[in-house]
Image 1 (tube, rainbow, N blue to C red):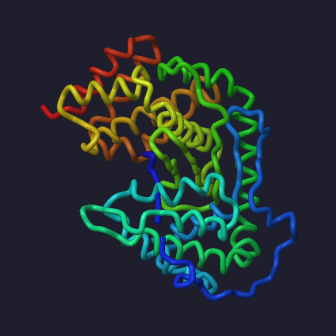
Image 2: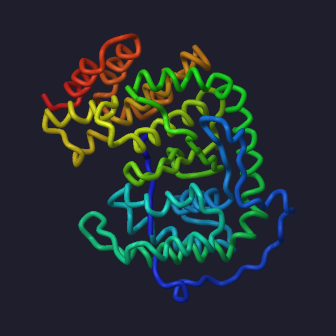
Image 3: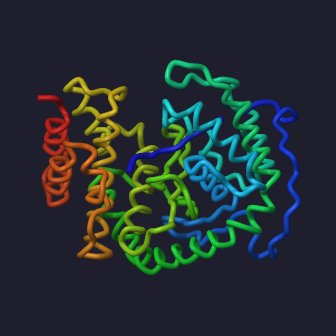
Length: 342
């Protein structure tokens, strides 16, 4: 899906302090702040993080409208953020990039305390810092309860997903990345690409937060995913991260596509650009799975995303021709023609 992306906010620490919740403490092995689930030498490193898991669980609960009693304040804080940021999905990025490295809610509050006081979202200023710090403090107050509760089940599901990826994708990862570099016209793939697996998250459950070529943090919801679908999702988010980290290289396939769209008057402010990039990302990830993991894999885009974007069928066909040998200029031109209004 898109860099479905994902992104951030905050206020003063004292004003936002949440009540402390007493809760049972989980065994030490279940309460690790974060854990790497693949060899650190792997080009794609999988990790799990109790903090990221808690955050995305709250995002899912904000959509559902309820959470268990200990998490009421954290849920309310997330619902306020959702209301603030609903006009601009990219406005979440400042919140979510730190979740790729920060392990404790206390430290997240310090990061959020450095956010701009306000941010323009849909033409309206919202109190980014205040609301973000409130969320981090509410998460801190329930951190132990979360690790002793929902995270226990999530951690097991995440570990099983990591084993699945390790069995299906990682034995072929060098071939996959060489093909990806050729397909996407990259001089190399930044390594390692770190993907944080989380148990739950809002639909579509795939997130890649970014800071436009300076930092990237990718998150994949594992609940309900397995086999080729899980591998495609990890590759999909890895592709988004790679695109962000190579955004200043003009000759990449994605930037050639953006240039081709711009020549037809479709610039970065047009949502069709993001939709076209997302469609290519879907097509490439699915193609890699079919070529190297599971020849019978059904592309995930066929389950919904392609039907949401009418040019998708033509874009996927053009990308498949490129994978089979057609040049990038012709491919970018064909995609731009499919997206441009008649």
